[in-house]
Amino acid sequence: MLVVVALFGQAAGVAAYPILARLAAQKKWDEMREHLEDALRHVMLAVIPISVLLALLSRPAVYLLYSRTRLTTGDLDQTALALELFLISAVAWGTQSIIGRGFYALGDTLTPTVIGSVLALASVPLYWLGQDYFTHLGLAAASSIGVIAYTAVLWAVLFRRLNIPFGTLASFFARAAGAAALAGLFCLLLRNGLEPRFPWTTFSGSLVQGAVVTLVFVPGFLALAMLARVASRGDLAALVPGRRRA
Image (tube, rainbow, N blue to C red; front, side, top):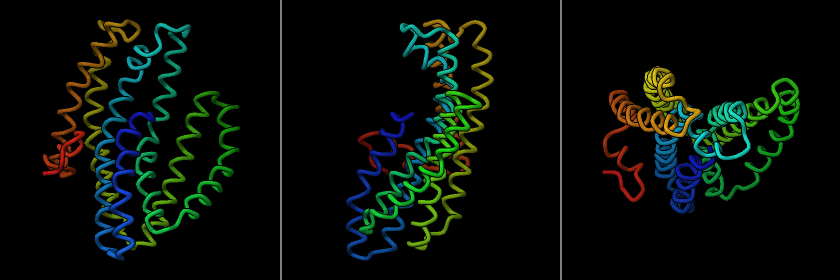
């Protein structure tokens, strides 16, 4: 999950920070708001579909990584379930790296620290309850809930400070998530159909499931994203490392 965040969330945050800092120093607030929103859309457009795809392929992915260890099939299945729960917060992880650097560009490192510290303390009972009732899955769920809450508060504070409306990005998120969900639902049926002949508990089965589901999901999401006006061809091309938006 953190590989996805590092490739698209943290990398985008590092790239966006110098521009955000320069615009804030020059008090070009309209341009700063525009650049911040563009960076957030870019991260969501990448992280949302990849998270859905990785959730679909959680068992094949875990099997390919850990099948030669001492983990049993049941252990691998439980690890895959934990991965799916962690992936729920991947978008929050990715966007908070942008939002955090928005605060830094304004010269404010205290607000994210205070918010993070307060919410970390407040989430401790959630971890205790999660562990007691749902063991490792409860811990994974508590982690996702905590990160989502932290990111939501950061969004609210920064957007209010910069007078950025929530509606546009909320609509973008809903349409991107909807496109990923539709493509994911079709691929879920496809994956379940492949399972009897190509079980994920074998090396070849995991490879087949991963290849087939990916080859169907990616073009399906891209087509739905363009139909939903989530992204143009230039936006999608910009997600490829080394490519610039047309």
